[in-house]
Structures are given as structure tokens and as C-alpha cells.
Image 1 (tube, rainbow, N blue to C red):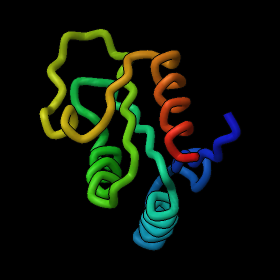
Image 2: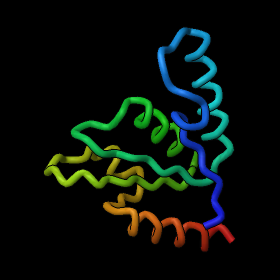
Image 3: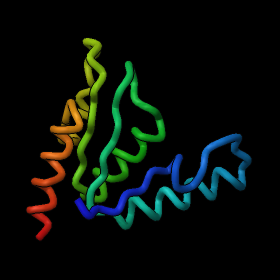
Image 4: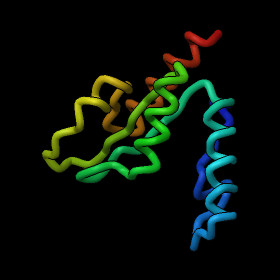
Length: 107
């Protein structure tokens, strides 16, 4: 699709976190969020990752286009704060379609 992507675990690293390393992760993640136009959040599981929740809130307050992908088929209620914050997709096909729609709006 010609999109640049950023995945914190892939692009900055993951592992035991010292205070210095945590600051590096935070600064890199924040910079990428501030400089992005669209954020895709994976929200599988009974409760989403706390870092992902923070990224969603920050991105929402910054006016980013937010898409969530939830492939988890368990019947678990999604927090209303998330439901009202992002566009929810349930498959990679739906995600792709939503990204195509977003990209067309960006032109």
C-alpha cells in the first residue's frame, strides 16, 4: 500500500527495561505517534495492553485516524472508551479496506 510502518517491539527493541532504556522506548514511541497520520492498534485479549491503551488515548487526543483490529473471537466486551475512540475491524481484510478508505481521504 506504500505506507511506512512503525512497530515499537520491532523498531526500537524489547527486553528488560532499565530506567534509561524505558526513557528511550518512550521517547521513540512518542516521536513516532506525534509524526504519524494513522494508528492501527491490536486489541486482542480480555483486556488490551496498557501501553497500547496509552497510545490509543494519546493518538485520539492528537486527532489521529485510529483503527483497531480485534481478531479475538471470544465473547468479551470491549471497553466503551475504545469503542467510541477508534474504527474497529475484525480481520486483516477489513483492516486493509479501512486503510484504503483512509488513504483515499488523505489525498
